[in-house]
Length: 245
Image 1 (cartoon, rainbow, N blue to C red):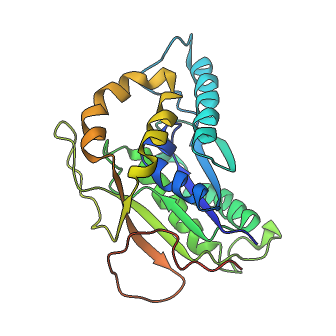
Image 2 (image 1 turned 30 degrees about the vertical axis):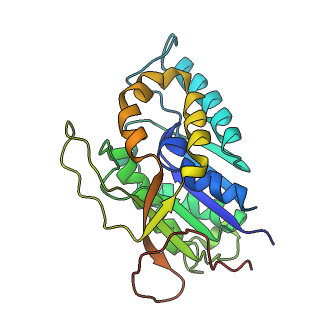
């Protein structure tokens, strides 16, 4: 059985800006990767040359697919929740859909945002963290969603994204202390090229370019849960030591 990594995000472009290094490194190591995006990004400030929300959503779906291709993503999926309103989605609904995908695809490692909402302290990112984290645990428990007709799946690690810097023009951010310092310098250019596929959002890239140049050589993550009790320590890999079932 191949080793598999699942990444759960809120918007098209999260996969490259937040997790692109991890996804590219996993693909280079021979892992299968699966990105689940909960919205199509219709509420984005930058509208590209779209005519309306549905048109922008269509554009961003295509951009998401191209970005995933650049990162070597094995499988990508975009769900139908409303951009900017994930905090209003019942957690039981979103978590159940993610549990179904975890039990079907059987990831060994799951990545998602932290509860702080990431650099732009976006409420959608916080909601995705709650949904994906609950699903990570509930996927393993037979009493959760037996109506799905799927065997429980015990993923081995759950990681939340973290950061060693914050943006001065945003609301206060309180990121989790990180436990993984991931050197992504070897795939930094690929991560950048993946973001360039999001042509409707290129103004964002221009704004974050200085931060990208300074901090883009590494990604930071916090080990939020694991299938074996362990003390928190600093490591330099998300996938080392994972055993395929």
